[in-house]
Image 1: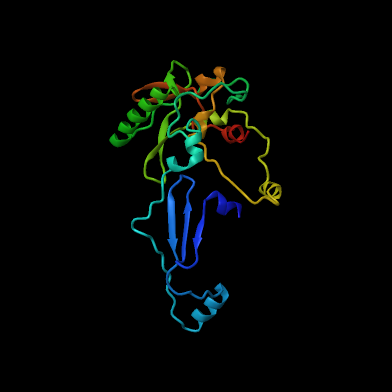
Image 2: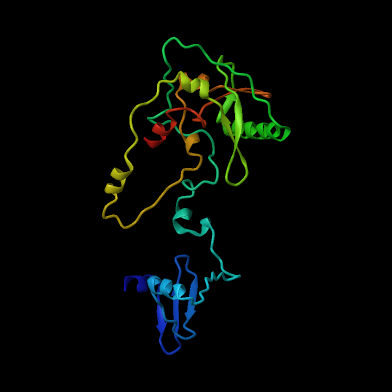
Amino acid sequence: MDWLVKHQVKIDCMEKRVQMKTQLGEEVIYYGKGRKIPFISVLKACKLLQKGNEGFLLSVLLPDQNFGKLQDVPVVCEYPEVFLEELPGLPPDRAIEFELQLMSGVEPVSKAPYRMAPAELQEVKVQIHELLDKGFIRPSVSPWGAPLLFVKKKDGSLRMCIDYRELNKITIKNRYPLPRIDDLFDQLQGAAVFSKIDLRSGYHQLKIKKDDISKTAFRTRYGHYEFLVLPFGLTNALRHLWI
């Protein structure tokens, strides 16, 4: 009953019409038409198909159906600073920063840039320019230097990754285990509503500890740079993101 009142639902049984308002205040009218279609269980449908009966699988889409946009969701409109399309710049100072603890007695590791195709070199220029504009990287004079490479995303675009394998070899690995999957499921017992938040560029929302910035340096044909935020490819990164 509360739901009917909230959406100002008006039901006209004679006209087979239901009138209501959406959360955005738009008026929607539904008309009941056609005959009642009987439903059968999946088990019964399987038995009928096994006996040689013909079945059809249909997917109906309305050509003028409006699925709406993210900006039409009231809670998104209420908190625009939370649902940003792009990160505006460096993340704020937080209690947790990414720290690189190295084995004792190691020397800085520096590798020459990898060879790249012309299209990849052009992409290097574009992505470095974007990272500089956002303040995620800066020019470096660090004795450290890792080469970079590209990994293709699902949408076909290229993700720039730094080859930190040599740095990872001399990094002290964090041994604290991640939570067990079955323990996480036990904690969800009795819950009815679930949500998942995929952070916008989650790695770039965590700052590098000031003393460790120079260790993230990477070399390209167009210059030597270092990260101020967490890049892809460093060991122990998942542990910090989990926290």
